Amino acid sequence: MSDTGHLAQARPVVVTLPAEIDITNADRIGEALSSAIACGAGIVIADMTGTSFCNSSGISILVQAHRQAAANHAELRLVVLSAAVLRALKLVRVDFLLPIYSSLDAALTPEAVPERELVAPVLTGCRDSRS
Image (cartoon, rainbow, N blue to C red; front, side, top):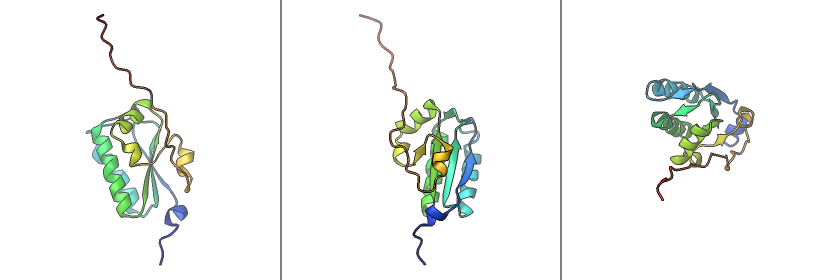
């Protein structure tokens, strides 16, 4: 039996993530994503629309969930609205590993194409005030 079209026919599962993701809650988030993937969802959406902070612990959990999804012939999608979170994901190039969407509606579409050019604010460095 062919697995072709599995993602297109799968019903997406949405896992809503908290406002802040760090070492104190990353394991719980990982368990929630893992459960959704293990239940056979073809598409799991990490809804980060309310997330304004995500440190390396959270990013690590997202990468682990991506690996689990790939091993289960599933796809992990992210929905990110926060400029700070998007900047953190882009700095470690997670945007090349995981599809990132700017709306939940877009991510829920089975055939959706991720937005490759999501706008992240330009990082401005501190300028030396000395002349």
